[in-house]
Amino acid sequence: MNKFSSQTLAEGLEEFYRLNPQITDPSTQSEEFSNILKAHDVGHVIYACDTGMRDELKILPMFWWSSECSFSAYLTMKNSPAVDVMYKDMISEKGELNLILSIIKALPLVFLDLILIWIKTRKRRKLLPFLDYQCIFASPTR
Image 1 (tube, rainbow, N blue to C red):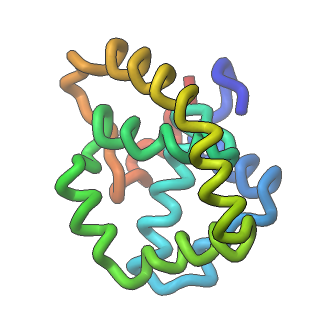
Image 2: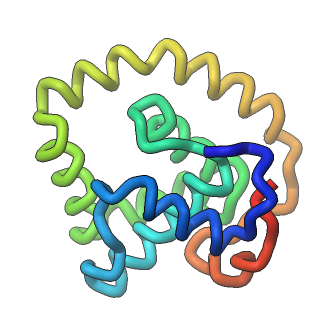
Image 3: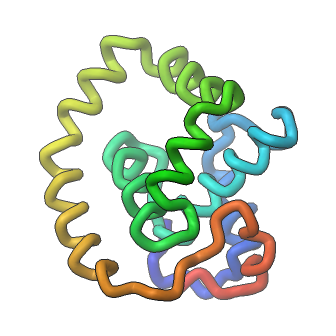
C-alpha cells in the first residue's frame, strides 16, 4: 500500500480488493459480517497495511487507538458468530500450525511497530469512524 497516495478512500478500497483477490468478498457475507469485514478492509487502506501477518497483527491496536472501534467495541464484535468466518478463513488459507508460526515470527517486529504507533497516536482526540466508514469515502487516503 502506498502511504503517500492521493486516491480517495473509495478508490483505495477498490484497489485493495483488486490487488487482494484471495480475501473474503464482503458482498458474499451476511449484512452484519459484511459491514465489519469492510470496515476492517477500509482500515487496511487508511493505515496502509497489507494482508501479511505483521500488518494484520498491527491493525487491531491501530483501530483501538485511532478509531471509534475501541477495545471494548472490538470485544463485543468479536463475540459475533460472523467474525468466526474471518478466523476460519485465515486458518484454512495458512493451516493452523503455519498460522501460529507466522504469528510467532511476526510478533517481535509488531511489538516495535506498535510502540512507535502508540507514541504517534496516544494524544489523538479525533477518532476515525469504524462501522460508519462511508462518510469518509471521498476523503484522500493520506
